[in-house]
Image (tube, rainbow, N blue to C red; front, side, top):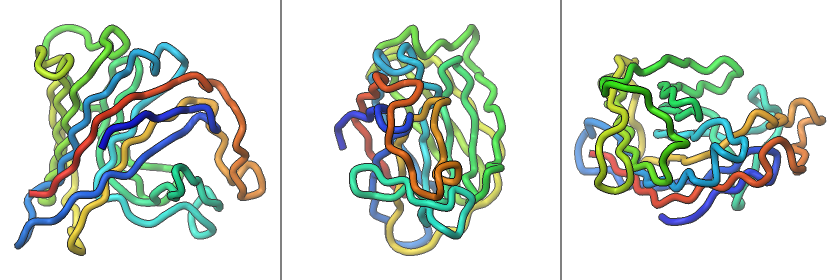
Length: 206
């Protein structure tokens, strides 16, 4: 899947990426994305969302209390994966349908500072094991040196169904949740209306 995310609508945008399940019990879910960040962090965007095993949607039965639609689809309610912040911090995240997602910093095993905005293109791989554990690797461009590599122990995740849905998203700090506007999202420019994230993404379960 190839495209662009634009934060011109309420500082958030996202797209789903589907992946077929193999026969038998899978060992992990994986999201691979080549990101063009040249017009993202420099234009006030805050972080990239890299979510796997997405389920549910925003609505009356969760804290956002209203849907968040982009490209005709509603934002997920539960998932797990990672986020990449503009300051170079990489974190695991578990979105659990509340305003208190589980967050933990993944230490970078590559020496030296990691500055995403210093690179035009980032090649990102996020892998989440179903038995537990999340790893992230980020390269400079398609075949450049590894800029970030790390892994963290995370809880086991149940696998269900015959397909997996991943999500790539971008968000800035001006996002206003529907709960603050009568449970209906207000589509208006916020803090990063000119932030654009180009991408080529694929997901798999193996």
